[in-house]
Image (tube, rainbow, N blue to C red; front, side, top):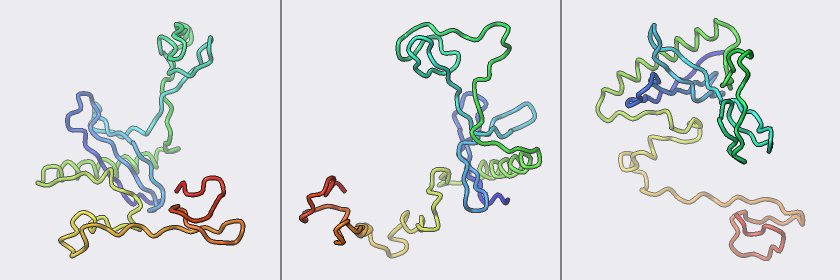
Amino acid sequence: MEITEVRVKLMENSEDRLRAFCSITFDSCFVIRDLKIIDGMNGPFVAMPSRKLTGHCNRCGHKNYLRAPYCNQCGTKQRSGGENDGPQKLYADVAHPINSECREQIQRHVIEEFELELQRAQQPGYRSRYDDDFDSDNVDVAAYAEPQAKNLPEKLPPPAPHFHQRPDGQTSSQRGGGGNDDSFGAGVF
């Protein structure tokens, strides 16, 4: 497995220890988003994407976040974990490495890219690539950004209509716009 790309979105005005979000691409074909770069005691570290855990209301069965004081559906006071239960896990990782070698590889690549992104942010005209489309094999992003610089038209032509085969063997456009198609949903697209 090879880390082929890391994209970083700096959090400049964050009041807590969160320094940035990042995404990481493996083998140019698999992306994991929303890793966090957090200031730790020994410098920045990478936290894996996670989600808040939920529990069900005893009265109505509605899902609520753990430790929510009241049900979001019916307003019933929620029971929190008992005192003897120990600390309650509030978050679960969505994706994470399963061995220390992989964790260290991810940590090293992400922190290196984070430091480079901090340097790029000092340059005039800086723009984060974090939100750019990851499907760059099909789109020349630079061509859309500055059409005059490449002698391209101001507006791109509309996409060609897509056709599909109907059960009666005829071809019809999914764009709609007339036609004699009486079938359910005809002309919706």
